[in-house]
Image (tube, rainbow, N blue to C red; front, side, top):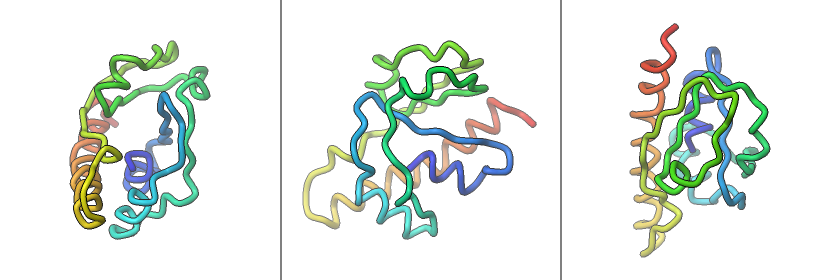
Length: 123
């Protein structure tokens, strides 16, 4: 969701990438709640962080504590910041409850990540 939000809001300044430690499918719940705010992430795919290790990033943002603790160091990264979010994939309950958890995290990402990018990478 973070890649989609940053791509949607900041693509003129930022080329976002998203990767994890255990690639899987992009959650259909994430796709659905992003569609609700007019962002299509259905063409995104899950990448392993090792696929990005050679990219000289200006900024790396980790978004879950597991990634912060276990993510390999990206040697070309000029700066790394951590902004923790609860991983909504672990949500349980009814469909509405699960979607609400995805919406909550989506909204937190939308509020916090672009602001962190602006703060860490001033124009």
